Amino acid sequence: DAGVIQSPRHEVTEMGQEVTLRCKPISGHNSLFWYRQTMMRGLELLIYFNNNVPIDDSGMPEDRFSAKMPNASFSTLKIQPSEPRDSAVYFCASSFFGTQNTEAFFGQGTRLTVV
Amino acid sequence: KQEVTQIPAALSVPEGENLVLNCSFTDSAIYNLQWFRQDPGKGLTSLLLIQSSQREQTSGRLNASLDKSSGRSTLYIAASQPGDSATYLCAGGSQGNLIFGKGTKLSVKP
Image (cartoon, rainbow over all chains, first blue to last red; front, side, top):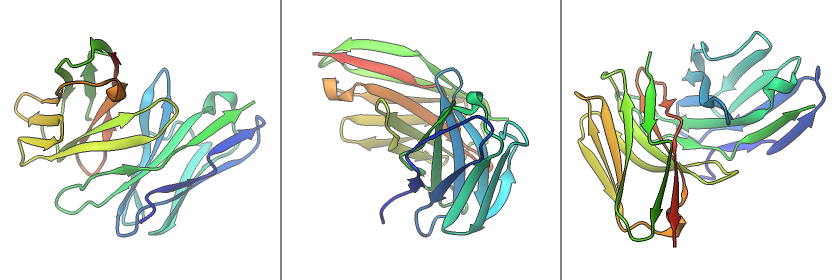
């Protein structure tokens, strides 16, 4: 397996524009996580899905953020409209959750800059 | 709600030294504890996973322990090398999620 794949790797956009980040989890994994990393706040869990269903989105900062997982092999994180304070590295991770979680694997991240 | 704390925030040691990184968590109903390494500008690489039924895991020069009753995990690095320089993060999994500490930035001097 190629691991967790995120796209794009880098995104520069103007304030007010819509941004869509994409993630392909590892095949066979049923849990998917979206994180945001900044120097000030570290790694923050934004939302996680289990079997394509959002389980906990309490970390999503505002209504401008939304996430979907239409099938087991694809998820998106959308920011609309984007603001400069959204600039961060966004990571996607996946694992298998049954009676216990297996090892979680991370994608390489998307570095978002909003100007 | 699970909270994960890592101490110290930064650590500098001479090459060859054995060292211990600490991680504490508030929710003892933890499913597992995972240690990661992150190099500057890079993603996270999984180092070790300890399930709640286990006490420790070993991989090469790395040994991680888990004590649920005290809410602590430690990562022991033996015979440190300059290539070990990175930020080390621990993450506690409960209720299916995975919550991270802010990491310990390790610098190993030649």
